[in-house]
Amino acid sequence: MKPHPRGRALALLAPAVLPAALPAVLALAVGLVAVLLAVAPAGRAYADGGRPAVTLSTAEAAKGADVTVTGSGWRPNALLMLLVCGQSDPVRGVIGGTNSCSNADGQAVTTDAKGAFTKVLPAAPPPRPCPCVVHVATVQGEPALMDTELKITGHPVAPLPDQSGDGRLAVLAEPRLDGRSSLLTWFGAPPARTLVFTVGNLGSAPVKDPVFQLGTAHGVFAPQWEDRQWKGTIQPGHKAEIKLDFELSAGAHGDYQVSLMYAKKLLATEPWGVDRPWGVTVFWILLCLVVPAALFRIGMAVVDRLRPRDPGRTGAARRHRGVRLPDVTVRLPRLRGTPGEQGAPPAGPEPPAEPDAHRAPGAGPHGTPAALPWFTPDSAPPESRPGRPYGPTTKGNS
Image 1 (cartoon, rainbow, N blue to C red):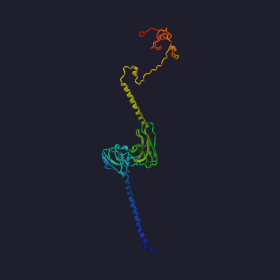
Image 2 (image 1 turned 120 degrees about the vertical axis):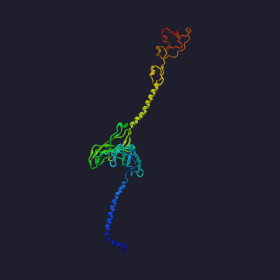
Image 3 (image 1 turned 135 degrees about the vertical axis):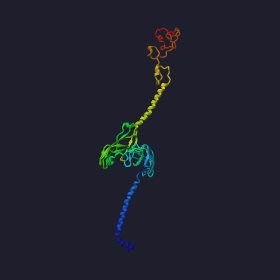
Image 4 (image 1 turned 90 degrees about the vertical axis):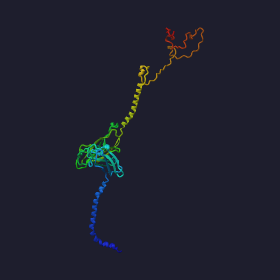
């Protein structure tokens, strides 16, 4: 089979063309590598454009003036908190935590599906002197924050505190909460715990007396940050166990989250479930039972004092103010007969006696005078009882 004429021509030209084209191919490869290296920084800059960003409508505002805050690159449908904070710097962050911010004038905003937002924020003077920033941070979910410098006209300015060094602290072990609730906590006393964690200095300089930010959050609310300074020095490459005491407000209960931050970086979070103070509930239940009973007793005493008195009652009856039952007297039947015959059983009915012609009218069967029908031996006066002589009669019986 004969080769194709075009393939035969290429085979004859290859030994002559390849040595001449090899430098051009190498130059083209070097050019492509250079282009890729030049495009790489531009690609990183584009990727950084997706990070959170905040811009202000003005860099300086008067006290109380409105400032429009515009953000982009945030997490979609994320809840953000906007605050004006003093003693802060975009590089070092809010040094004093939210205690350096005007929390009463803060604003909340939710990002759209693209992670952007626009919100009007009043430039309220913070409790700490400037330099000031507009602090934007996420409330829940993955933490993210951004600080943008803002000058407030007429607000005092003071230099920022000195940094303790170039050291970098990192948490080496999982933090824990030490402490137990007491009986007073069961009745509404502030729950208290101790956050224990181990940090290591990963930098090249010692860290002396570091200041941590300890925050407590309840539910979906933003953490309330407080400064906690630890006395001591951590040398480069060394570690230390740190204990920070904190407490919640009186009567706090529910699910809380304790957060630890240092140098604008979140180091650790720890959940904490606080029991309900059931002693307070029992106290209110008892109060709802005792107060009505006491009011009822007071009302009854007032009514007893104000009701009219009966002038005919005796002193003992007047002193008696309670409920009195009627007096009941029980009398046993007395046996008829003479005192000597009281213990004998009652005699049966006597047979009717025959009439005696010699018996006087009204006399008994043995000739003794019969007693009147309305008198009995027991009811007759002592002087007229059988066996006793008749005494002197009184005026009423004569």
